[in-house]
Image (tube, rainbow, N blue to C red; front, side):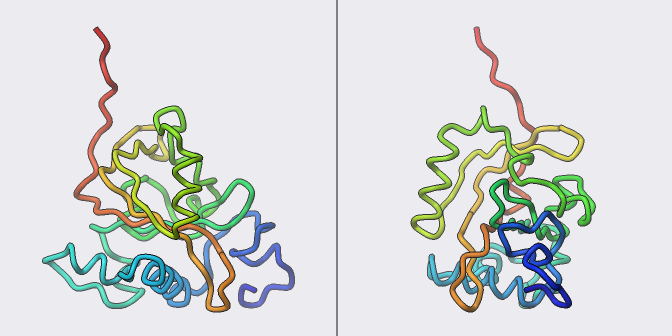
Length: 183
């Protein structure tokens, strides 16, 4: 349960949690890193550092302030709510952290532009991780953009309890959305 909380509704990992940010950055990033490593063989820090020539990301604080590699996570609510976004994600999606952590993750997508979204998410959850290609996303102001490739994985706490999903992407692979034209 979240620090100082009295009920499951105060726990950002609980299904009944109504919104808000994680309260322990280091512990949360640790969950993200270990969960990705367990499912894919490569942890979050390793994934980022394999793709970066600039700065090595080795701590939760460095990840939180990173402006190139976006990291997002959401909880286990029936309509999952974001509980974390680092600087790259906040800038790209156009949110302040307090606003992001009140937003259902589905509002960052365009379901009609994401074929078989439900099937894809179920496959990712079943396998533990997977990629979403050419993901059309929505900024806080409604502007659409595309991220070429997003790595998504299931997140577990240290007791093995499933606590949500997370995503990482290279912000350099984001571009403006151009609607298809039909002749």
